Length: 386
Image 1 (cartoon, one colour):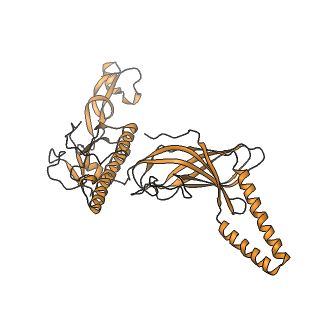
Image 2 (cartoon, rainbow, N blue to C red):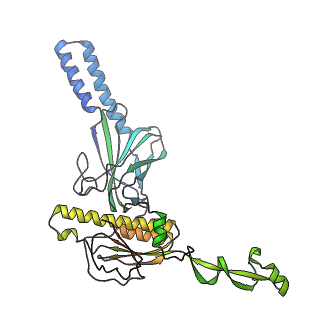
Image 3 (cartoon, rainbow, N blue to C red):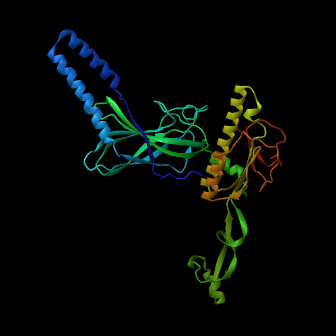
């Protein structure tokens, strides 16, 4: 489970780079110097001197503004594949007189100018991030705390690793960029891609009576009439039967039935799709992996929408090692199921049949397979997610 990271980032390194206009600045400076030497024009020498002065000012200002500036990453509790996620940073400028302007914050992995390597989420196959997370702060005053946000776009479920925070500024002229890196390793758990499930489909999938809810045959609820009993201190005046109380001379209250929320037991069946390591054809591996991810996404979407509509839901995964979840309704229960689906390792398959906590009412298959382990009756609903 990924929690919000509030550990202090450790200063790692510092360097100077060319800013967005640095290359053009040096090209123009070289041309002015060449023409000035050729023509011996004092005005061109003055222009070249001003450009050198701008370069020196840019070096001094960028170095002074980021000096002693600290940063701390605050992670979200989770992300969702295919949806934007915001990384937040707490920046502090401890200097008493010197502010910082035009500060950019981004994530960095490994070494090199771009900070990419084979284990980076931006270059791995398949990629886990669409682009670099990037935030921008206009001004950090002296002795001031400020929060910055860097949106990013996760593409795959699982853990998203984070290594370094890069803080930079090219103020005032954009010629030289001062870069400081802070080491702070962390990871964010990304849930599977979620889709909207039609409420009519949820109604058909649930185990319900024709009136929409099953009733537990005992009192204590607020639904239909169950029986009569003597008044107890604390009972609402609305449920007192005044006519019967007047006839008997004692206060009598009406007792109602307790409702039972609709129940759905979901079985994610991965036995019909071989693991990627079992095939030597890259195109077949990609097809199988996409089918599995699609089935996991449909399962996670069903779990989310069932919870939001008040359903009790359970989960079991067939074909991989998995601890089943019994039928229940609560926010921690839903969160644990989504986390389990996000961390599901589909490369390790097993043929061992698991003991199911309840009969599956919904079977979601990643591939075509007859007589699947989850099949136990004709009253089940089977979806092929591939």
